[in-house]
Length: 156
Picture 1 (cartoon, rainbow, N blue to C red):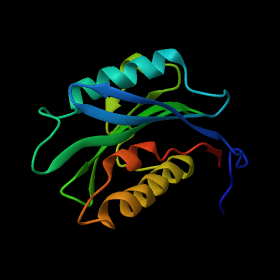
Picture 2: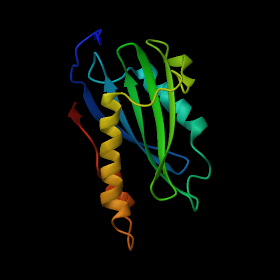
Picture 3: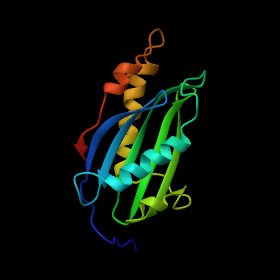
């Protein structure tokens, strides 16, 4: 029988900034279990990871220099996703995690096999919808600027 450790509670999902680095434009979202937004330590760790992960040059035939990051100050762990659009309709997804309060020790693909939690999926779905509406549905004139202006701010 399934027994839950804690009941589902809504969490704030907030667009925090449009971060620009070496030709990349990344929408950064914050999620926090017990605060309005993730800790500054976790935010800085996320940007440090992104600087190592984002390919250079930012613009190529297969990637467009745009994507999103999720920085999640979770119940039991800290998580960072660095995701960008690739080959028209594919997200390059890179996940990192660490035990709660250990943002400086984020590990690639931790915990092993984990994908997304229910809160992170809300961001991914929003970004999918924004990409389809503003880029894929406009083959004559894909609109990256409008895509970047679409931002999620909600409690889920």
